[in-house]
Image (cartoon, rainbow, N blue to C red; front, side, top):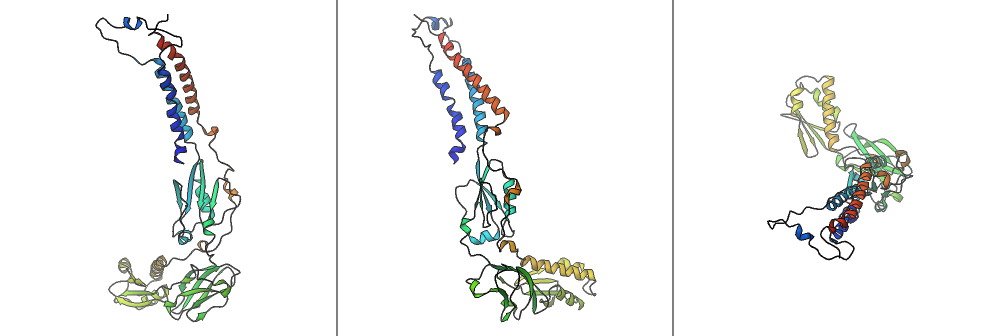
Length: 382
């Protein structure tokens, strides 16, 4: 592939070979013998004048430079293959190596982003117009995709399809959690925590109150036996163990405010406000300085405390995006305005490149005519 990309440069180098061959032909086409003309050009001091390069040399050099510039310009119009890699969480979980042989890589998404077909098609729109694209993703191929876009998701088809996912869980009180879920609508499933089981979940998405006796049990999304060969990714939600330390001397009303922010939290007292998520501790010194702990909290202070606590917990346990776990219906690629074909034909060649070719042709023709006459002065015919 690299050889063909540099082929115009190699061709430009070969343009100079005819000139080297012609410059070796110093004699006229007729048979000739040497005369005295070369000796008459010698000066009286016995020194020969400095030889100057003939006009044909400069003409051919100019032709060579013009042709080289035009070829290199045309070479830049060659189609280039681009590998567009979906690096979203579902692709990374599959751990399938991307195809080799591509020099140009464009990465879309990350482990924390949900990438959809529209995101990949928009990334293709931003590529140069002379690109052919291979898309490496686990998403299904859009409808009406042009032939120059190769949607490579064959390696992912053997992966077990995820049937459902727990999206998030928030405590309602010390023993009950509000759980948001999504699943394939026709697949029967239940939520389970320890020995507690929910009713059969109806529909493709919803929320259910789950009774949690032991926070370490977490919450499972359980499918009927016909659909439960293995536990899929996203079918379990680990419940975080939260401890909130309030500053010493804080008004008792702050305990109620802290529990309102996270009802399952365990409270304690200490030198400063501190939030512990499982085993990770975070000291919030700035909050200690700005809140009036010795007095009953104002409504805006309660809201501020709740916002900071929930933001920290949700950052450590972010909600899941159902689009990264459940199959999505293909979209129509024709609405993105892609051309049916892509080539590097002459209409893409710039005007200055055409003028360079014409100038090179004229200079080469003049050089060709000048070479024989430049050699006649050094020979005489018999």
